[in-house]
Image 1 (cartoon, rainbow, N blue to C red):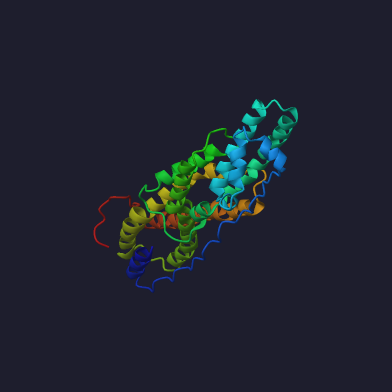
Image 2 (cartoon, rainbow, N blue to C red):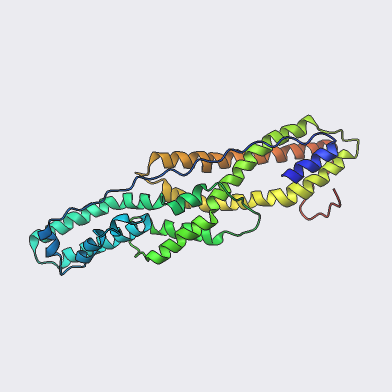
Length: 306
């Protein structure tokens, strides 16, 4: 964008337009840690000694167990659900069976809150709203997209077993690539830069009778068509691939309203503003070429030095 601006200003023999300052996006909202406690008397606890629930409850009550990360907690809660069902099915004690079934229903109800806490984990917040990096025209982030798809497939009420190591591998991949934040940051940059730039071009529109019109066409082809527009195409690609996944993950009943507002503002509205800015910029050039009876350039035309 900087080179594009400088070359156009050089052809028009005017000062380079000042770039618009791009404000950083706000961090993805934090999610409150769920309580999820089941209180057992010692007598009830010892009744579970022949059941896999016994070791899980003991694990949870260690110091390390009380400091579980969201991914570990979700994995633990899923194991707990399976253990409750298995113990209830296998016990012959009617009172204990009733109690276990009550706990099972309670844990099913709490599962959504554990899932939302996972979706608000530091890894995913990093992947959604890190204020670093841009999207390139190269398809670099297919692995991270597949990691988002993995999470989508794990969304409750999925009955799939969870491998904690694999889950954490996908979370790390999302955080490291932060493809969603790159998409948002790139679309915000273009949405905030291009409108003022398009207005600046209109203010300095040259006459069609001099050489400037042809030189401008060359600059547009070399820097916008060949370098900027491919980034826009990649941005569109990732937006349309990721949008159904983010909807499926973050727009479920019970999700914190702050998360929905964040997505509406940065993901959806930001994409619409970017599309409008791109369309208006391209429309200016189309009008200019039509006025000057110039054929619009295409990528790879070999336009010569600019």
